[in-house]
Length: 457
Image: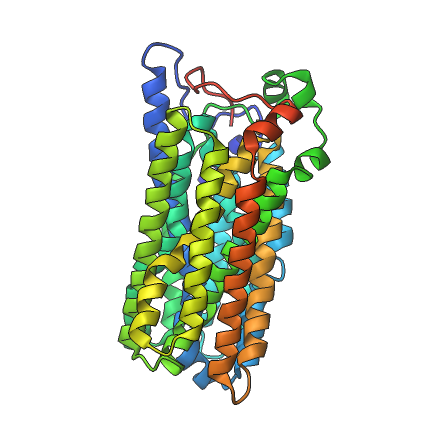
C-alpha cells in the first residue's frame, strides 16, 4: 500500500514528491544541499548499475566452464544485455515528460534485482542467462539518461559539470568497488552468488530511494516548463537538436567511449586471465586499479570543468581538451594492444587508456545545454540510444574475433579497433562540439540559479 501510494503521487505531473523549497534568502543553500544529497543517492544507483554489468565479466571463466559455452556463445549472452537496451533508453527517457523520474528510477532498480536473482538457481543455464540479460539490459538502458535528467533538476547549467562527473563515477567506482568484492564472493561462494549479490544490492538501494528520492525545483514537464521558455525554444522541433554538430559529435564520442568501457567490462577479465596469464586475484586487482584511475580521471575532469564554467569558460574549450584526452587514450590503447610486456599493458590500462571515459561525461552536459528542460530527458535518451548500440556490437565483434585458435591475435585486433574509434571521435568532439553556438541558433537560453519555489515532480 505504501509503495502504491508513492507511485500514484509521483506519477502525476502536478504532484509533489518532497517538501517545497521556500523562496527566501536561504533557498539557494537549501536547494544546493538537497541537490548534493540527491547526487550521492544517484551515484549509489549508478554504482549498483555498473556492478550489475561487471559481474558477468568477472564470472566469465568459471561460468563458461560450468555451463559449457564457447567464447562466441558468451559474446551472444553479453550482447543479449543490449538487445533492448537502446530502445528502452529512448522509450523510457521519453516518459520523463509525463512521469516523475523518481518513480522511473525506483521501478528500474527493482527490475534489476528481478533480472539478477534467477541465476542463483542451480537449474539456470545458458537460456536463463540470455533471458535475464535481456531483461536486465531493458531495465538498465534508461538508467544513466533518466538519472542525469533527474540530477539536472537540482543544478543550473554552469554548476552541472561536477555533479555529472560524480554521477559518472558510478561507471568507474562501480567497477573498482565491485571487482574485489564480487571476486571474493565468486571465489568463496561460486559464480552464481555473484549475480545474487548484485540483485540484493539493487533491492537495498530501492528501499532507500523509496524513502528519500525526489526531483529538484526545475520545471521539466507540463505547462510550467513551457512557460519558463522563450516561444522559439518552447516550439523547437526535436530534429533540429539532433542535427546540430554538438549532438552528433557528442553521440559518436559517447559511442566510442562506451565501446571501450563495455569491451573492458565484458572481455577484460578473460583477456587478463587467458592472454596475460594473470591469476584471478591479480585480475581483480588490475580491474579495481582501472576503475580507481577512471574515477580519478572523471573526478578531475569534473572539478576542472566546473571551475572553468563558473569562471566564465566555454564548452568549446572543454571540448578541445576532451578531444585531446581521447586521442591520448587512443594512442595508449594501441600501445596496449601491440606490446608484449604485461607490466606495460597494466600501466597503460590503469593510466592513459581511461581518459576516453570523459567523453561520455562531456556529452551529457553539452547535450543538456542545447536542449529545453522539458525535452532534456528525450534528447539524453536519444544520445543513450546511439552510444548504447556499442553495447550490442562490441561483445559480438570481440566474441567473433576471439573465437577459435587465435585468441591473442583476436584480442589484439579488437583493442586496435577500439583505439581507432576513440581517436577518430575524439577529433570530431574537438572540432564540432560547440554548445553555446548551437544553443544560440536554437534559441535555448542559459538557465538561472534554481533558488525559487520547488516545482512539482
